[in-house]
Image 1: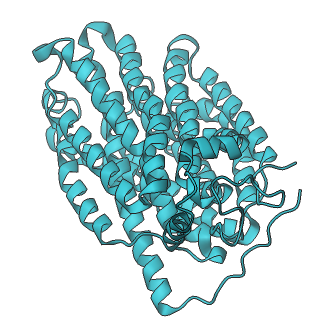
Image 2: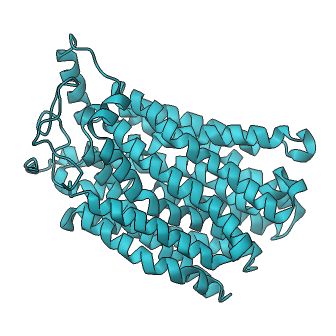
Amino acid sequence: MSTATPATPAAPTAKSRSSVTRVAAASTIGSVIEFYDFIIYGTAAALVFPAVFFPALGTAAGTVAAFATFAVAFVARPLGALIFGHYGDRLGRKKTLIVTLLIMGGATFLVGILPDATVIGVAAPIILVTLRFLQGLAVGGEWAGATLMATEHAPSHRRGLWASFPQLGPSLGFALAGLTFLITNLTLGDQSEAFVGFAWRIPFIFSAALVLVGLYIRLKVEETPVFRREQERAAARAHTPRKLPVWDSIRTQPVEILLGGGAAAMLFAFFYISTAFLTSYGTTVLEHSRPSVLTAGIIAALVFAGGTVLAGILSDRFGRRPVILASLILALPWSLVLFPLLDSGSYGAFVLGLSVTMFIVGGSYGPFGSYLPELFQTRYRHTGAGTAYNLAALLGGGITPLVAAALAATFGGTAIGYLLAGVAVLSLVCAIALRETSGHSLDDAEDGPTDATEEPRTDEPTGVLI
């Protein structure tokens, strides 16, 4: 199958560089805030939710129940991708980003003031699940909007770098979440009743101030030029009925959605095992102190951030797919040595294990910021890229930590290593089936069909290796 000619990069002007820098900064800061809100739930689920919302179940069953509520968001994420993808492809990237930020911030704040099970009984976990579902809807629409704001503003020859900046949301959000919990914990004591009683709520309530900052920043950015041109083309063919973006993406590129989601599953499995499950494993099984586990998480998050940007830069030089494949190949042996390393009991081994795991995640996550958007056409890019991304989140981030908690209780940590290796194999097979996309134009007028009713050209760029 032939491919489209890569777009020739235009010489950037000072004005264009300033615009891209501003958009990248806004996308990054907004993503950090949203992922902070999303990740503090996982930290709290590991540290306090079993005692606060499931006290009658005991430690082991309460932990599984807490991670089950954690997984609810990953069921909601594909739905959020479809809902906000539709509006992102119809109304614009900027508007949907504002809405997702408000939903995420509101749900997170309400978790922080939710009475526990001793006060309102079974209503507490029910409301908790509902709020977690809303978080999932919001983050399901967040990623695609933030990355599209960066990729559709960026010059093609630097798209991997610029698209890696909104990808810093999970790493810096995790570091910020760990820092707020650490400060709260150190202030009140490692095992104090005050921490479990009310102090864990402070990071959730604090998110309200962060949301106001993110809202101000997002209101200042402009819509992407690629989307504006697509709107002009859509207006010019107003006589032609427009298809729903979700149907258009599934009809035209279903294989890319499925393979893209499969290829990204590993990074979610590794990330959420690190951020949620290992936080619990480090304190309950390995018996490291809560502050030391939170400190290790902050260190690993900063390593993750560095790996993300480095991988984005390398993807501009060597291509998206080679960098992703290298990360997936490295993930296979590391999956099998991770838990034997952790089970040595050394705190240094815990920091090393967490940091290397997160660096591997960054090796895939950096390039995926540009890779998934490059797979899809403008008219349904928000929907297609977001759906693929959140299918990966459901498999790797929702199901894997829940299964891991059950495996650890029955078979120990080694079984989790085999689980991670299995997910890495799945991602590797899917990534091999995809092919390179770097250098292609994101503008449908230059690269692919422009009419929503037109069948794809035989020479349109595809993400599938045939």
